[in-house]
Amino acid sequence: MRRESLVPGGVTVGDLRRLLDARELSSVEITEAYLARIAAVDDRVRSFITVTGDLALEQARQADRRLAAGETSPVLGVPMALKDLLSTAGIATTCGSRILRGYHPPYDATVYARLRDAGAVLLGKLNMDEFAMGSSTENSALAITANPWDLATVPGGSSGGAAAAVAAGEAAFTLGSDTGGSVRQPASLCGVVGLKPTYGRVSRFGLIAFASSLDQIGPLTHTVADAALVLSVIAGHDPLDSTSAPVEVPDLPTQLGADLRGLRVGVPAEYFIAGTEPGVESAVREGIAQLERLGAALVEVSLPSTGYALSTYYIIAPAEVSSNLSRYDGVKYGYRSDDGVDLIETYLSTRDQGFGAEVKRRIMVGTYALSSGYYDAYYLKAQKVRTLIKAEFDAAFERCDVIASPTSPSVAFKIGSRTADPIAMYLSDVFTIPASMAGIPAISVPCGSSDGLPVGMQLIGRAFDEATLLRAAHAYERSTEWHKRQPALVASAGG
Image (cartoon, rainbow, N blue to C red):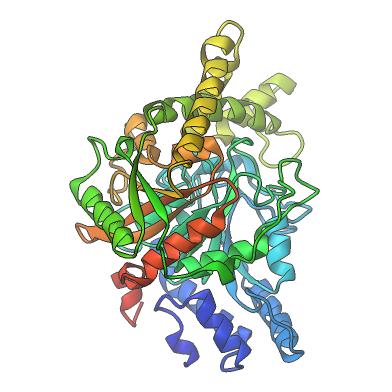
């Protein structure tokens, strides 16, 4: 395979691993191909906030030296990119917000440190909804990312830049963060694989917080096998993160198989509701039927509190936002307004000018929910509903091994079509939020198309049972061709 044929075309991490280990291509050649691809298409897609070309080539040269010495790892020499809320020492980290203008972290996020030490090559930092608050990447203060399948539509959010970069052939894989669906929903809209691991499976150290009890880092990739490879590198206990679980990580790539005999797939009626686009429901139901044809047994399960998950999330998450974002005061780092005549006015003007409308909305909602007289009525009650949602998943998993549903109720929608209606935007995550509330793993895999745009099927698993989840997703993927489809932006040789 020639270097120029690598991109476009959806080359997988596994493909690159074989090419590198066989010395058919060097990491420098592969990295140069990706940098050329970014230069060719990113003015239209706008996935990247920062491109770290010089660093990428230096890391690629180091990877080639390690390969020459006989070393290997799942990601050694493989180019990737990070959502711009993962700290990278000395590299601008913005969270898609004006308030972090000029901020260069003094340390690396654990996930980046693990990838870097394993030899991955950092191409740059990716666009996102400001502080990960959004479902379309239209809330970024820096740019609006476009969906490579249709540049007039959104890529989803908040990890829209991460999903679009993979779909557009600008990185072999990316890392995003998922609080209420921010890896899975953009994966669905962009026709790629997006995995949210169990809460605590992957260290959050160096992840700039949105909602600390919900945030989880996960990979966006071309295939399920790639997701397993990347997760095998970034997962595992981290003493720097008090929420990191001291749970052994199985050898996930070796546990993928095509045989689903004996697997029980739960199908919840609550996830097939009015408001879901007919083309989406049809594609997902066909995906579930394909799981049955592969040997899985379909089981009806009930998750009756699903209808309360969205409203519960929009109490708990904003409450944590109001606490986590109080640190942005114009004193310690990032943007500082010059308009304040004293300390209090400096705080107020900095936050007014530095935060966008959606961030302000959630800070206000969260502050209200935590305020005296409303804490018990809203926040405490929401936490009780969250416990109930978790209990219902536990009961469902006594009858099944994975749960199947749509990832998003719609395909990618037009840029600007929902910005004036926050409720319509929030409903984009109606199927992904429950698994986040329960802290359990979930994955979105391409399962069809509607109106020429990708549809994703979500599979949800038991806590810390990513192995079964990935096995089911991998078997489905291998039996279909949906993951091989490429947007016209990629399929055209001219880019």
